[in-house]
Length: 126
Image 1: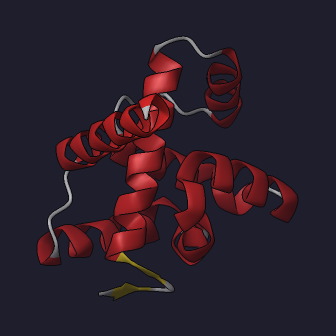
Image 2: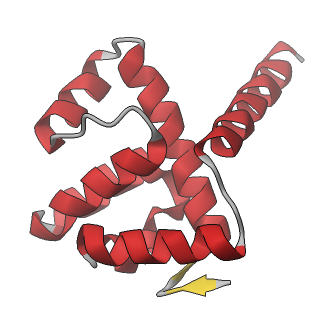
């Protein structure tokens, strides 16, 4: 499914990456804490953090959009730019439509991130 330049798979991947950053934030990672504070991100789940990012994203310079977007949303960042540029209202509507057509919950994103972390550990150990 296409969502204004991005698709639901990109949105899911972006939420997974953002969820990992939330874990880093909650663990007290200094650079992540500093970034979240500078952006005003206080949400405790990936969907809320994405909406808060969408609040400030359109006001950022293109250079900051690339740097912060890629760090928080990973490889799917580039395809999510059109969604983020719509701000919170535009993104909320698209997320609701995506949830209706292809349910992606914060819990499923968290489980996928945990699975990916486990695979990374197995690959590292091998």
